[in-house]
Length: 107
Image 1 (cartoon, rainbow, N blue to C red):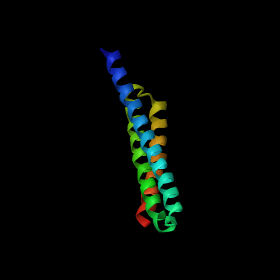
Image 2: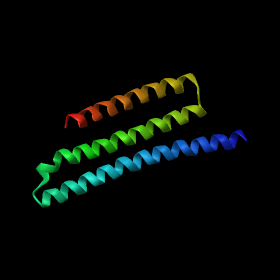
Image 3: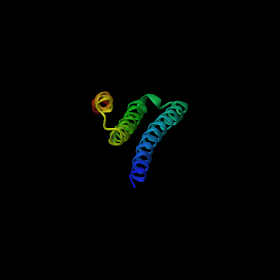
């Protein structure tokens, strides 16, 4: 019973990490494609700000999924070292997300 619960928790942790990666990759590909399309039509400068806002929002959303994956992983290994590593990781990702979100609002 415990082994199946551990497997389910591990699966969702991995799933959230993959979803976060997919969102960031999707945002990057979308930004590149939009940039090159706008560059070929000579309208890139006008849309550059919107491309950055869209890409930054995808990065922030992807980081949120990474944080969720880390929290779920810590449920399986709730040792002191894992909690310290989780705290540092979540703090760094939260700060990155905060400043990216702040930059997006300034644009």
